Amino acid sequence: MSTPAYDELAATWTRLHHLSHLQSIAGWDQAANMPPKGVEARAAAMAEMAALLHRMRTDPQLPTRLARAEQESLTEPQRANLREMRREWRLANALPESLVQRQQLATSRCEHAWRTQRPANDWAGFLVNFREVLALAREEAALLSAETGLAKYDAMMDRFEPGMTSARLDVIFGEVRQWLPGLVQRVMARQADEKVVQPAGPFPVQQQRALCEQAMRLLGFDFEAGRLDVSTHPFCGGVPEDVRMTTRFREDEFLGSLMGTVHETGHGRYEQNLPRDWLGQPLANARSMALHESQSLSFEMQLAMHPGFVRHLAPLVAAAFGRQPAFEPANLHRLLTRVKPGLIRVDADEVTYAAHVILRYEIERPLVEGDIEPEDIPALWDAKMMELLGLDTRGNFKDGPLQDVHWPEALIGYFPCYSLGAMYAAQWFAAMRRATPDLDARIDRGDFAVVFDWLRTHIWSQASRWSTDELAVRASGEVLNPAHFKAHLEARYLG
Image (cartoon, rainbow, N blue to C red):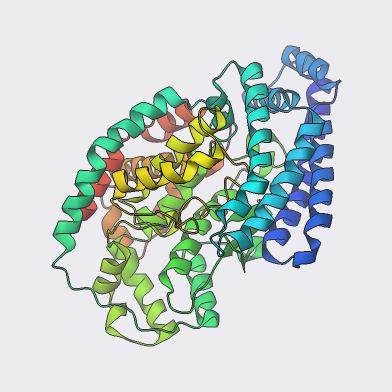
């Protein structure tokens, strides 16, 4: 059956994919390689590319083609692809090209300045750029809200997590807020008498990098279709054919870079295993950012902190840094599962991590909706850190509101995805255990393929074919159920 309108749309999205490929590599290079004096030129180039992609997504001919394609005889996957095209078109058309360009310039400048402002604890200097970033984010939120009918924050979150709303999130996070502080105290009390041997450094960067790459191979990362580099903030970018991962190293500590790499490898494997038959089409994109985080956290929290996996990781650590008591499997596992409230989200243990996400959600939502101003952030941060984690953060902007790259880059609405991802990861492993009752024994034996095969079948290969809720039901029998997350934490830390 002839499908000329659909075919024209597919060709347009293939071209978008190719140009987005170049944009993502330029973004990776900006974070990993670019010399400081390149920032203004790169910002201008990235703004030009953002405008070009926006122009393509807002082509006046697209609505006619979308309408005609709806009338054509399409397969079920093609209809799903068309649904995703229409979504992209709607979101792009809500924003004028001038706003897209101004945002790209503002966020590039803010992020670049943040790199030096953070170590300098320079909150006042950060605000100079951030006020403009926030003003543009509010402008975007108002336009997206008008287009989608969603509340302003929900419209921003919908870019990353389609279908999720603040109302639903308030229920989910509200429940976690009730049981999390008590769980943290119970776990810390239980761990208080455990003997934990601390690793003796230093840990040379060259050996750390080699160890990280060994862990990536253990987790099935394809180095023919990706690589590992260094950046200020670890991330996974690129495209499925060329995944660019980054981590960061400190010579006095190695677990942060190692587990950060494991985390990003989960993202990388999701990307590398998206359906190649649909590559270049929206259908082949990752479903949502919470699902993306569910993959990184399936690797980092569910698998890599499993005692069976740690037994296979420990010899690699000893080979990298020399044998010492700290690297015995049981001790290494205790190191990885220590629960202690800390200031830094990316270094947080899996029990306290959700508190960091709830804190950011409870600040950025009123921030984008105009109920608070940037000047209000430090006091709110201090109050919530004390309430949720019992920590005093007054005057410490570096390890407080300046610690993340998300706000400088206007990624408002992204933070909830981290904890939603942890909840989905726990739900996936609960489903795996139902399907494979001897899952834990197989992980003990070093059979990690059972995990990868399940994820490939139920998550990676499905990409954006279904809504998030439908994908969750197909994979695990139910929509997101935070009870699995609580059960996982209680089993690991109190069982």
